[in-house]
Image 1 (cartoon, rainbow, N blue to C red):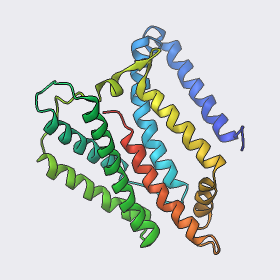
Image 2 (cartoon, rainbow, N blue to C red):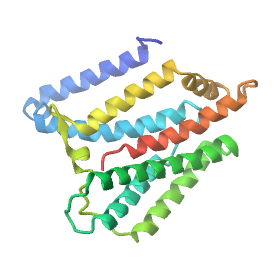
Image 3 (cartoon, rainbow, N blue to C red):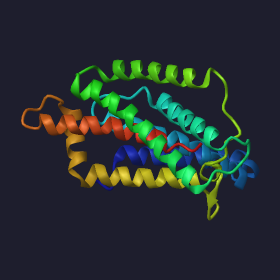
Image 4 (cartoon, helix red, strand yellow):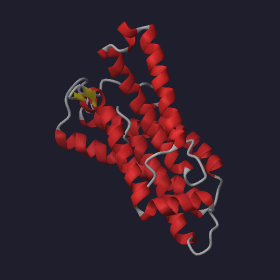
Length: 230
């Protein structure tokens, strides 16, 4: 495992420079608790999506359907909760919330399974396959909602807008997800096959394991999308 990477050091120094510059220009606003909390909330969403893309880019491909996957899973969960908790603003029970979470994870799993099947099994180009599934998932979401906005559902409000020790929960979820992904990629055989697939997806002798890793990468990517705060 490499603890120091020149590219990461460069990015870190650039981030410190940007933060320092903005802090000197408007220290009263930039370093205010409200602004820091807002930045953590916004960056956690981008961070989870970046993890979803990163794990597929390691295979030498890309997943263009991450946003559509996140939207579709959120729509399915929102519709489920609206049917089970019809009163606007009413609180869902722990059992209903848990069921909705599991259903959302299953929808994300299905989206990733479909992407993985198209790419790892049928051999379609990742950019073309996920471009097509992006359109498909958006279309399904539009049909389910009828083009209307879903609102008044607060089952995951605490998870999406809550905090622990002053740190927004979505930021904590992102950090935990990034840590787990890092450990999996560096310390497990799955990570080895993922890097190997990205280096040469036709490497003989490892073909079956590499295809399984690629398949799993797109399912993992979809599950990261489901972790996005509501």
